[in-house]
Length: 266
Picture 1 (cartoon, helix red, strand yellow):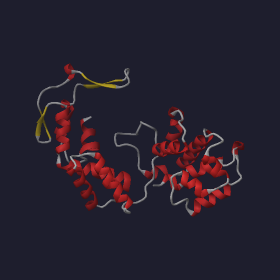
Picture 2 (cartoon, one colour):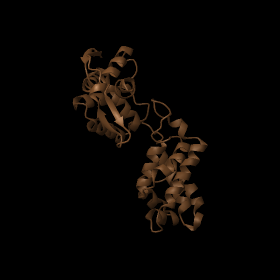
Picture 3 (cartoon, one colour):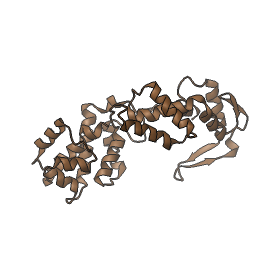
């Protein structure tokens, strides 16, 4: 875990040595996960290497020392700020903007909330670019806006087809970038997932009612799209008006709306 902490979550590449990785691994010994008891975390003293370790220029002996050393490192604030900025604003945020976010993070004792607030305010001011919402968060958002609670395991295979196998990234670096989620197969998988969500809605659903009319302005409002649907999506949804798969008016319109670019690209 020492390498993952340093490279993926704390500092990024080129900010530590292999000796730091080994020192972190030794200091972190003793912590285990109990899969048979709800994955509880437990510290087992007899499995801990208590010898002092030289890590990032200081002496550490345990997990707390490792974490403190990472958080105190000059690269930490900027690395975390860049990660948060990339998530909300896209990958092309300029260096000066990231430096500003890093200052906010440092000035607030590395509290995440002020950093996220600064990034979101920048987004409201027009900073950043559009980015593709990965399949799992998209599906969670669709379920939330529809007010349904499906059994997650039933949809894991479909999410994998959309390009993101939940909780099982292909490597420690995580899932591939947005380009992997925009092909024909991932798009078809999203549409299939959207259709399953629509199938769970009761006949009295306001979403179905708006889609059946079709009142696209009301439907966009219910889906949290204050600017409405774009020209292409509007044309596609109007073309579907009258299509009632399974005898449910509005089902096709709503499924396509849930998988539309307006909800997939943020």
